Image 1 (cartoon, one colour):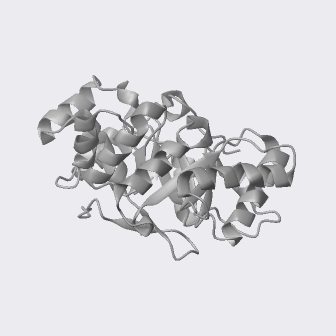
Image 2 (cartoon, helix red, strand yellow):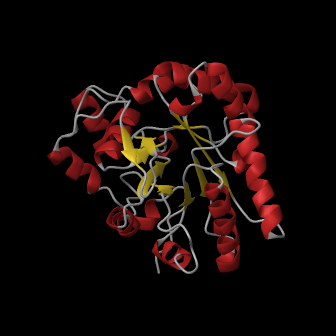
Length: 282
């Protein structure tokens, strides 16, 4: 098995940038907690934070980055936009507002994603063109998508200056492996990020998972995060519990055997296993 480390990075296609293999999610991290959690994550060794306009804590992520004392070029910060504004210019200004919150005045984000495929063909095109402009200006070092299926990424090709997207962030864990879009992204060199990799602990009592956690003397969350890494996904576990922040990063000193990976792979329920969203590919 590959010998991963928390400092590992993956290349982003057609850019000089690299993305850390493990990220820290802040979905629904309350504003009065988010800075503390991010600083704990940095202290633990995370260098990759994932936020979004929808999470309403971009400013807190930016504050934590600046408070951390870590050089900005050593932190990878992602945010997302959910839907376009009324015009291309207004949409671009929505992006700029996020860049300023996360990166500070004159700053940048490392990755900016379209958060959802739900704004329709025209909306997706408007969002992508605004992101391309941001990318050209260096205010986003990479751009990508989230919750996009094969048909949505193929659609972007038409008239795109930047294609393929550098990243597709989707829900991924043993019960929802999204094999079609995963294979498509890997074939096209798109980095696959896994949100909800620990399934929000809904599967903490699953017999197969519990058995493997006992076997490896790990928490169920650690087994799931390690599984993500070995699937060549970039997992984004989220927690505001300081002990779990540490535990979720302590996944680089064991390997799940091929036999046990196969056991986890066998848990796939297709789209029925999704707790948030399975993408539409056709």
